[in-house]
Length: 513
Image 1 (spheres, rainbow, N blue to C red):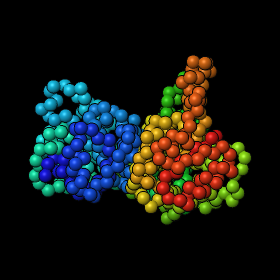
Image 2: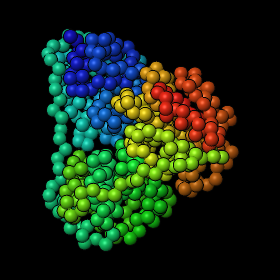
Image 3: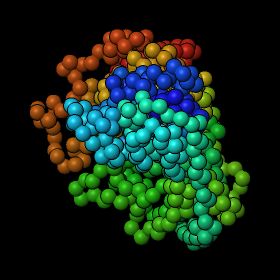
Image 4: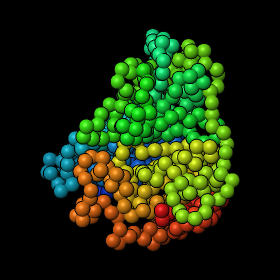
């Protein structure tokens, strides 16, 4: 057994059984060791941002980490944007970052870099296994650290000689942390404040937005406490049978207008809401003037237990309101828009589907129609770094092979990680990709006005528009191995999407909106 064997066997012993990889020379011992551990599923991604985003999607659905295999500092750097999203989602991920042999670092070879510094910003734990004898124990530490709480990406640096030199010993088991329940004092304080408030709200995020947490939050709604969720959520149930909290508005002035009159905001699994960006003469903090705030559950604590305890303290019923099943009974016709696409998705998406949402300005059309669709889960863009919709879908499909996965993407977002289509085809994953093609960064056109930068002139438009030439998404998708179709009417999309939902395997649909 060498160090690479010790690493993989320890990962598998701790139920880390998927590896999204883009390896190089330094990682060849890890690659070779995979043949001896068939329980580890290797998935090749032709860009590191696909590998890291896929690991994020896997962790959100599986509730446990996958690992990535990245080639030195530049490889990690290529995957950094989607690790930023994963850190904001608190997704457990084990990044295995290859490095030069320990004795080779001193020579500053062309691929040499300061890996600990590069990985630090988006890793909640970093260690280098500089001896093969430490690989197994450090791997177990990495697994435990990835769970937090509240969890996130960790980075285990594996020098090449630690991978190839002999290592002894059995796999080491991780001591996984347990989320503590919030204190009784916190629950009592929140209950007392809510009873005294005229217009209280509870803001939920993180673990509180999972199915168990949302069900407890619904009980609060049943006794007159308005429940909001964070704007962007790592994972939450949606559709029939689930409670639908209000969603914190993206634009700050809209959020504050909606919250006008709120005199108490209680946090459960989240923190103070702030505007996504700063704008001239507009507030950054999204709390109405005079509103009291307090924390019921810290991010690292058990939000389900905290919400249940608060609901009990307020003598809430055992079950709160949930969404009915109300499917559109008429197929959309005419012009193709995000809203007509949403109607078709609501009509045909099967129960248990997973929606990976990177649709940006088109996302509202799907959310509106899907609110009363068949039960499904939604994975959102948590960190604002677009280009995650395609990779998230890969990870979700690997984690849940019996569930239909939908990848919903803006055209600009899709091009960040378009290489993901090749991995979908190679692994024959049951993913239907929808790309909304409007040939512009529409959100940036909106933001240019909001920031006070003014109207885009000829030079500015060159950085905001995606035409000239328009991307031939069907040709790109087919070239990467997926069956593909382009739709420019509601009728065409209805037909294509309905067909995709009754077939297994990857499918690509361009929606020209």
